Length: 82
Length: 473
Image (cartoon, rainbow over all chains, first blue to last red; front, side, top):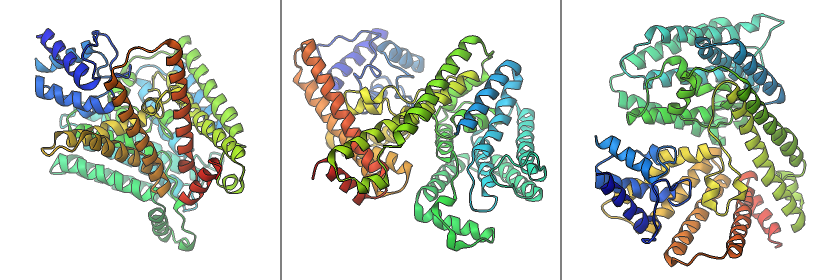
């Protein structure tokens, strides 16, 4: 389950947001504070998470304090799925 | 905040840190913040207004708590005591009117005690009615949300503020001929409004934790951050408020260091730069392109040192009191692009607008059945957010243009970043990358500096003339 979420998120971020499908994302790569995902793409990411994993991410949560890395995002999704 | 305020606040924070423990900390912060907001309020030519404005801040904070509290009250006794303490502090401030040696905490004599007591009873009844008898919580929260925005609009629109001043002057039987938009200088309201709008909205979406009256009022009027932020979130703030805190030497050293850095930035650097910084008079008198750039750069650094110095002081005093307030500035003038600049300039304000305006608007536009082209959505979201952020400073054309200036700049950067990413180019040599970064810093800095012309000068015509001089036209 976790692998599926990681793969889904990685594919979406590399192909749709940063537009570099060959880029490898480590679990602890800072996505927001590192400047890989801007505020506009964050909304797209939230919509993708809601559609794909059925998990609501509020507008006030789209920031580096709530999640900044792939692993934090996976934990957030899993905690809301259970 | 003056140097006197700063000295008293720092000394109080130090004393409180040493003397006040555990439960006493909350009461100290509540009473201290209440007294501070009366003390910091500037004088108003309208009779007694400098007493009623901080009192209205307290009333609005208590109403905000009453509207956002959940149904289950486990701490109703504590909340009642907090309510009584708040009322007693307000009365005590008013009573300084009768104590010649102590008169007055407010800049002018407070109104008569009977007026204050009547106002407290009226507010108490109003709060009880809305807290326990208002039929639909959602309607109440929305009503308060839009009421705060309406008050904000009146205060920030010159014509409306002048009309409000004239109305207040008729109530105090003063001449309405002298009514001015500057009469109602409601200290801290902008920041109080942001905190309240955040709590009202988060209650609507079920994301607000339950807090006591004491905690809520401290959050809204926390004195180090009262006049100019940072804008904390309640969820984060109460973690610091509820933790056990003992002032030790690490907090003392880091708090004192931060305050000193802030004092140096605000009272030495910013105040010195103010002597040569761009202002209405020198902008209209200077015809030399070179000197106009000197004035503009002086203003550009002045606004940064002034505001970030203030934030340093607020964060430093916060540390002495056991709070780690969020950062507001992280070297904004050294950023390589405008997006990075807005992630490091007045960070808590930009975050607020992102969370409560930009994200919902973008989400709405992206989720629509008839989707607009992506660049159009980005353009609409960026410009409307930045114009709104501009209007928060005041409802004038100059602030609209300043907001649009940055909105458009952000849009251009977004498109450029998209284009650069799609080229998928090979990594550049360190030398080229360095050159690229320095060019980015130079461009961003000057774009922001030119934007300040719109921000600071009062009319579009003067700003335009200044820009022409800067361009050598």
